[in-house]
Length: 453
Image (tube, rainbow, N blue to C red):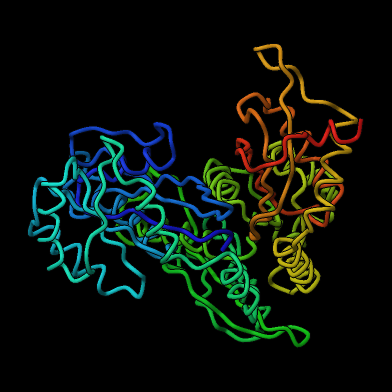
C-alpha cells in the first residue's frame, strides 16, 4: 500500500466520473449520459493540506454492457473495492432511491470497508432535503454535493479525510507485514508450479506437462533461512483471442489481481521459447502497477551449453527497454539451481521498495541535479522551478516534487531526475513513482536552484 485510497462506487449514471473529474480538477474520466461509459478503473492522486491519497473511479455496478463486457467491468470493480480504504457510495438525489441503489448497498455492507454515502446532483437546498431519503440505505446521513455546479467540494474532501487512515497509520500497518509475497507469472507451461514445488520440497502444486493445469492463484507459505514468505502461483496466460472459457477468463483476472497484491513479481520465461505478445502484455501490466520485478529465465539447464547468459539478457533488454534496471536470473526450477539466490534477491527488492528517505537528503539530491542540468525553458520562455521534494509513500517509493509549472517539465527531463534518484538512493532495482505538483501559497517561494546561488 503506497497511499490511502478512496474508490468511487455506485450504480451507473449517478455521476461517479463527474465527481472524479471534479475532485481531480481536470477532465480525465469520460462523462456521458449513456450508462456504462466507464469500464476500466481510473486512479489519480489528490492532496489536501499536506495529506495525500488516491481516488479511483470504477464502472457502474449492475450494468448490462452493450459490448458484453459485464465480467470485465465487474472484475475491475472488485479490484477497486478490494484495494480501497474507504468506499465512496454515490447516489443521484434527482432520481431518488432506486432498487439498484439498494442492491449496491447490500453488496457494500458485505465488505469490511468504511462507506461514505454521497448524494450527488444536489444543485440547491431543496434537493439537499430530498437527500434525507437515502438515510434508509444504512450508511448514515449522506454528504451532499453537486459536481456539475461545484457545490460542497471541500465538505466532501473533509468527509473522505475523516474516514481515511493517516499516512502514518498506513505505514505502521505495512511495517507489520511478517513476510514477503512474491508472485510467479508467465505464459503457460514455463515451469511456475515446478519451481514452487522445488522451493517447498513437497508437492504442493499440481504439476503437469499439459498447459494450463493451474487454474487459480494459489498461496504457498514456506520458510527459507528462517524467513517466512508466500509464493503465489498464478494461471499461465495466453492471448486474448485464445481465451475461450470462463476458467481462462477468470484466470487472467486473478493473475492481474495477484500482480497488484504481490510485493515482488517473478516474471518467468522458458529459455527455449521466444518472447511472446502475452509476455509483453504481462510485463506492461507489471510496469503499470509499479511492481518490483525480476526476469526469471527458467529451464536454463537445457540451454546452458548452447547460449551464454549475456545473449538472453540482451534479448530481454531489447524487448523490455523501460525495465532496464530489473534484475535477470537464470534458474532451473526442476533441480533448484540458483533458486535460493533468486529469492534472496527478491528479498532485497522487497526491502528497497519499502525504504524511506529523509526530506533533507532528497532536497540535497534534487538541488545538485538542478545545478548540474537545469530544466529546459518552457514554451513561455520561462524556466520551470522545483521548490522542494519529499517522499510521500512506499511500495513503490513515491517522490513528490513541488514546482511552479508541472506541465513544463518534459518527459526527458523527468527521466533524468528519476535516473538521479535511482543512482543516489537505495532504489536501484525497483520502480520509483515521481509526482509533480503545483506549489501552493504555503510552500517556499525560493526554488532549490535559486537557494544555491
